[in-house]
Length: 277
Image (cartoon, rainbow, N blue to C red; front, top):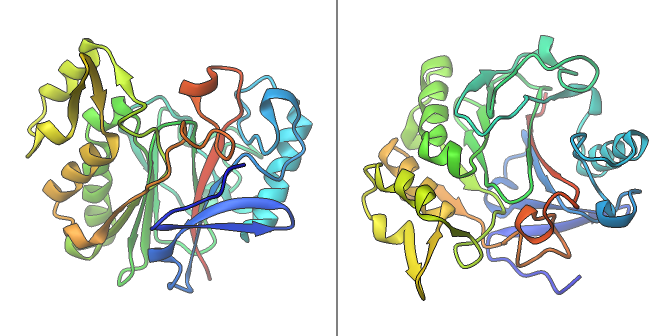
């Protein structure tokens, strides 16, 4: 692994398990959040080693052990996890205590869902990733949280805006008090796309499309960080409350799994977030 550097995230290593956290969120003692890496697990081969995706061909026993190790290291109760079945859409679910174990101990209570919100302590909301951004959301006054999976399809469907609206509608959150941290993702230099993808972004009312769709040496690139930032700003989030990760999944393929770098021959990562009791 190359030397890790980030202005906005910390690399934590507990019992050989490495995971990332946002510096902005670490000051809240009632909040736990983490983004997994590929380090510290028991998987082998191209799943090495902290593969947390049950959609891969890795041995189920390895993935279960990895999840146990990750939860222990990052301080989550494994029995509290709530996992949706993600489809690159924009549906958001409201996770409650009754949903704990969903997607693990029982079938998911949230099919076709790419984001979760909750205001109940002891409920860990989870999304899975391998290049697509996660967006961690926190209203520290209302003590409500959200976590979404915002790949390019979810981004053009404005999943970030929908999550902000649901936090407001469900828990009375004021968008101006919501803080958002956009997690590790493929960077714009690495994310080369075809024109049909670009056309989906051109349809939206971005305040500065030139920062979202880039043309470099005849190739189209998409900046998912910037796209989601602009969507969040239009949703009422203050600019000072938006943190974008500076850790690219593809540039850091020794630390993180990347679909663009490895295709299907890779593991997957999890983002987790919960309110402490």
